[in-house]
Length: 604
Ligand SMILES: [Zn+2]
Image (cartoon, rainbow, N blue to C red; front, side, top):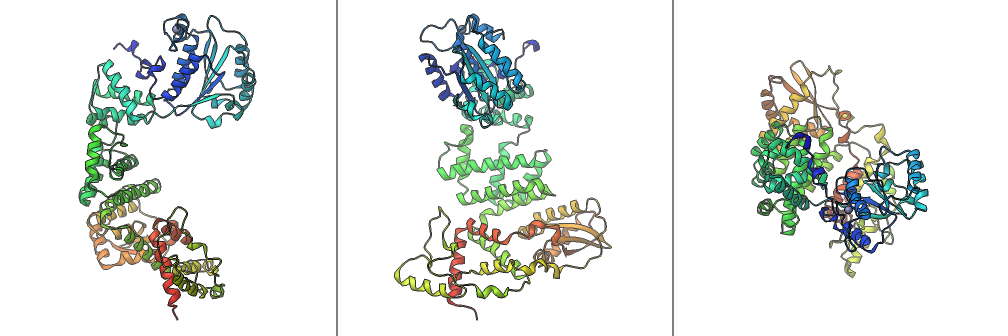
């Protein structure tokens, strides 16, 4: 192909007639009907994401209106008459294309208004295509509005925009609006394979899906990826080489990851992470790809069909097969870990560690069930609350008991949740007596957690920081050695590979401060974390790991509580508990049952 004749694929294959427009049949059919009946509006607004055919449709419509060779019933432009040819060579005196991004001043619109008054030459109508119309200034919009209010009969406007909400409502109300939609991957793949045929390019189906996915619903983007792919790989597009060339994480790696999760292979999972990162892939890109992959598995598990999975036929079969290893619950929880990690990554001081821990967490996912997870978190909360030496306020017992007519809102199940049977709402006559008795008790409406929550809001807290008493008196910190935190992160990575993941996860919120003499000082958020770190087994493992890192080899380690370094570790308790209750409906029932039990058996 001579370079002077080279046209990018998106332009070369730009649809010239309605029939060739991809995946916008709802728009096309209405326009064709209007053309057939001669009932065209004076102004159209084409909205939708970029690259889906708005401007292309506007051009076809403009040509169809002005084509002089069409016979009675035809609607498609002939592409051969003077009008059609003039437009293609940009010499048309009746069809104008205006880019509102660069002609957005009121003067530009005034000029347009002058132009509008002159009747069309030769053709049937003057058509103004205004692209990115939302870019007009307010003054320009108002000037345009005057023309739209009383348009000359020979004029037709077609506005195109990706952001219809930025167009003045007075303009919107004078337009017939068409919403163009994102183009489904399958349609893009079909279109690409047609282009491959006429360009003499061979491509496997997975390669075409890869290109289509990169386009993300926009045909124009997919076509420029196609050009890039041909430039990089020549006329034979294979998925495996293409994925490497376009720097996309190979889907095989995602299948590998979920296989290791299913087989509980933490070691293999970590070496996979190593490979992905040493290949230079962005971890965020990897995680969003993994989320998509797990979502596909979830569809296969939940619906029992591959119909909604947007990949090649071959891969769909593989998803169905791979999904057999998982339950819906495990997949949902994997997605939660991915989601949590994705939001954590941007601020993480050690993204690598965050990724590795997430990978291990996913491998361990199948080992536990919802409730145990909830209980572990509750235990953690309760422990932290117990470690908080705050006096109970004197007013606590003076709280009026809630009456039966106004039950505390806590007992109302969240909307949309079907209330499960519990002692509280079993609702039989004999139960009613049981309910009324505890309610009249002083602590009737309060749960254990409620009481802890109330403690936390004690005014004393402002003068009496809960963790302060345990905080170590340390001499002023020396300037941290460069690379110390990095070395400490490596220790945790080594730990993660050999040790108790739960422990390391707690340790994740720790920070190497300095070395003083023969000792590495590590800051932690609170006593609990320090307790975990000082546990004999854990300490032994930490020391062993330190020996493998040259900077730290031979040092002792000491942990100091420095809550101010970990603001996120001092959460809002109310929010924390409410979040847990929402997440685990069984927990809400559990606390309610516990309340009832405590109310019936008050502690002296
Ligand atoms: Zn024509």
